[in-house]
Length: 159
Image (cartoon, rainbow, N blue to C red; front, side):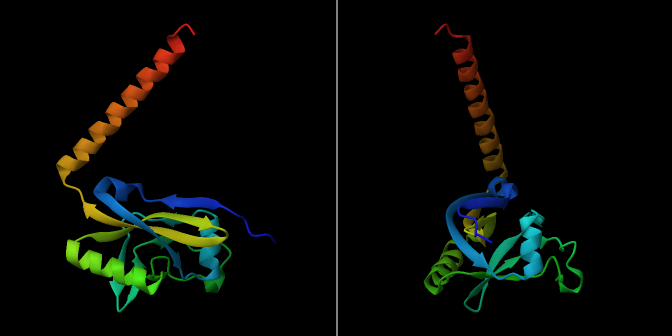
């Protein structure tokens, strides 16, 4: 069987973009069992309320729900278990020091297949205040209204 090239997005964490300001993004691999990969291929993953934590020089993904595979029987693992992320040692040290110094947090923003391997996009995030959330919502509606007006203007013009 040939390995698919390119990127296929499995899930995105939209709540992270609502609750945090994402400053930097990193790519990390993940340690999974076979039935978890099959479940991911079916798109059965939930990134809401998940986060990444550094412990003893390793980074761990906490709170991600990967539903059990339908035909997995005894090989299915706990859907909410803590999973190890794979990154280079110098990247882990850099992330750990940045999180400790600046008071940032690490959240998974995206899960995808890249050349047949499961990858997670990790974002260094700073929490938003309520007024920041209102400002970003107002900006989105203003941009949507402007785009709609431009589209209508082009449609109604006599070119």
